Length: 217
Image (cartoon, rainbow, N blue to C red; front, side, top):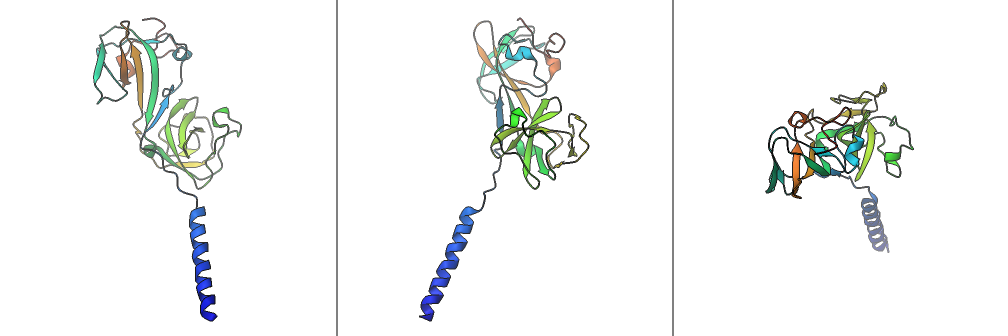
């Protein structure tokens, strides 16, 4: 009988250990690259979402089949040749923008961009992706794109200056996160392809407030 009790106790211990392992919350790691469609880095001019935005390079550029410089060339634009913007996206590298949450987030819980999403708490790790404009950044947390203020993140190279004095996170990433902005441009011939936006000085400026986006070819 004593032997039976020992076997039962051992089996029970193994059961509790096993169930405890199953219930442990898994650590959610970010992907190597996050592609955010229909967004650009910084403030987004309204013309970009109007369906009638154009871009005009100041020197020839190559258009690729996909948003990847290793993809085949499908067309090109000559200097001064306008093309319609038919798509745009940002490629981010989450592990370059890791932040450690040390305090409560200084944002309104009903912020529309975060509605229905889990937000990081003290002790959590989130990942800055790119600047969204008006002092906020897009960030990755548990498979969701969330909106976080830059102010209050210690050591963040650029924080958007919302004037939040209380520190609530520490930046553990790199100075240059390496975000890439890509545009899909359509020529007057109907040909279209993707180009990486490297420098605004390579594009003809638009009217005030519109960056490099024009209202006509």
